[in-house]
Image (cartoon, rainbow, N blue to C red; front, top):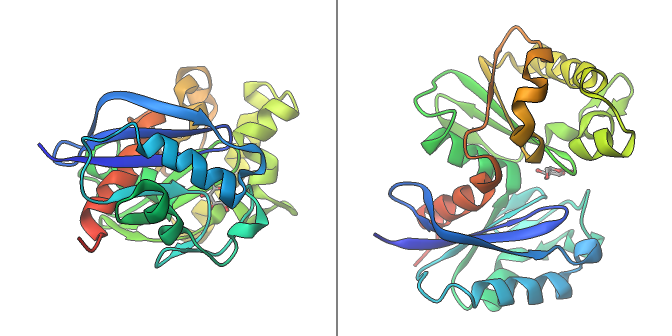
Length: 249
Ligand code: BGC
């Protein structure tokens, strides 16, 4: 069994785990540290180094799921992290911090890759849209299993405001929305996405998916709506799968 380190940088915590990339499973305990305030480059580098040092058995590349547009290791946006990440060579920073080849991927794309491979999207053809509801709204779009990266649909305007400013899990908490009020907003977002891209399936992930039973019955769309299966491990597993497949060894 080959173990690959996967790391997921979220709004409140950075999680890391050793992933069996054949089975797509976390082996052993996830480790986490609080996300440094503002997630500046230097503080994040130190946090990544301390997490990576806890996984001496993971060899080969390390994958990082990061909340930004990522192309060839460069982060291009910074909606919920320090603006210093815009144009930063995140892969080089990760490589230096972890002491092994670093691969960086958008966090929702990572979660989507994991769900498609070993979770709720397994075997799904057609158009699948994975959405993560957390600090922001992340999106990962698949056509017949192939990822269209960096779709960033959380920033699409819905009724005059960015989708993630109306319907992220963070907004639900901040505005103390009950499930019906929040789901009404989510349904407006799903309707807009459906009009544009006609997905066959929405996979609902992110921290809020842990409470799926409490709100599932309130969601509506002409597309099927299913919960993510990997829940809080999707980013870690997806980052490791992505790294194992794309890193230059
Ligand atoms: C970011 C995306 C990210 C999403 C979920 C958005 O604000 O722009 O890159 O996938 O949040 O974390």
